[in-house]
Amino acid sequence: MAAIEYTLPERIDKIAVLGAGSWGTAFAKIAADAALEANRDTSVVLVGRDAQAMAQAEQTRTNDRYFPGIALPANVEFTADAPVGLRDAQIVVLALPSQVLREQLLTYGRFISQDAILVSLAKGLEVGTGLRMSQVITEAMEESMALAGADIRRIGHIPHRVTVLSGPNLATEIMGEEPTASVVAARTLPVAEMVAAHCAASYFRPYTSTDVTGVEIGGLVKNVIALCVGMCEGMNYGDNSKASVMTRGLAETTRLALALGGIPSTLSGLAGMGDLIATCSSPLSRNHTAGRLLASGISPSQLHEHMSQTAEAIKSAPVLAQLARRHGIEMPIVEAVVAVLTERISVEQLAPLLLGRSLKREGH
Image 1 (cartoon, rainbow, N blue to C red):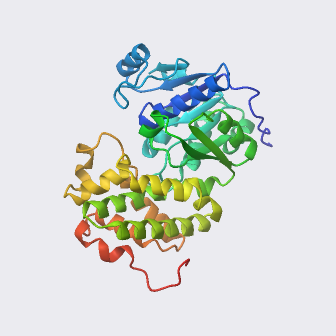
Image 2 (cartoon, rainbow, N blue to C red):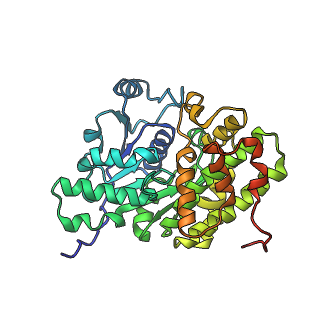
Image 3 (tube, rainbow, N blue to C red):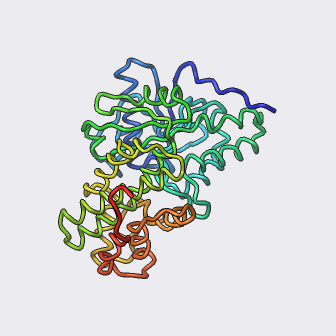
């Protein structure tokens, strides 16, 4: 049976953001401000797990756990009731850690409209499968919709509704309305353009792309490179070392993305170089912070005791290394980070491995 051709929603009345962490909260603000600035009557619902925290946020208009004192726009609603929050939303934003994304979609996917556009904010690879987040979303939604008895033809157009958003987007700076840009990627340009139109605010400029693979690879590998740069900083290495790791890290990212079908220009843009620079350079970056903590003597297993948010690279790095090996791609920086995370070497032994390829021409 042929799949039903996917038709974009005629209008966006409701945007649901599943996940009320720092990035989910920041994106809810972006979407709400975008609607207000464009004079659109669009509601934005931020869906969190903690009923008490969501009730408090509804009363105070702030998410005090992450951004105390920063008021969210009047068109943002808060709820811990996911079925209610997701129901009838034409755009559903998935602001969840990569390792819980499948589980959450299997639980709540049946409450998502069968024609809703799905926006992934997660940056990582799934442990066990090695899948990118767009692939996880597709599989989980297919299973969820099938269990709910959806028309199999509608299940067939799920990949065309999945989009990814990535770029140099540190949530704290966005909440302060500091100007930034990002990339929305989808299989087809009209889908990416619709998402972009509903997150284009005066301080947030989304560009569009059809290179879903390249955008995702750029977003997930930079976390591992930022972890390495954080370790370098914690070891008091200077700017030469950090710039070298960032530049060669971008080369590793590009090699892998191209092997998987990505486009070279994507990796020199916002989702590649832009995100890499922000994540590797800022103390606001969770992965950069995790790297510095590792260099201070904290073991990988103890990081959660010192960080309130997830550093995606801790779990993604070994999966990334496996993916690269399967495709025959050399990623010495990633391999060195994995060696530290698996405690095969200490942070002090990291340096010789970082640039450990045989001598080659640059660009190879």
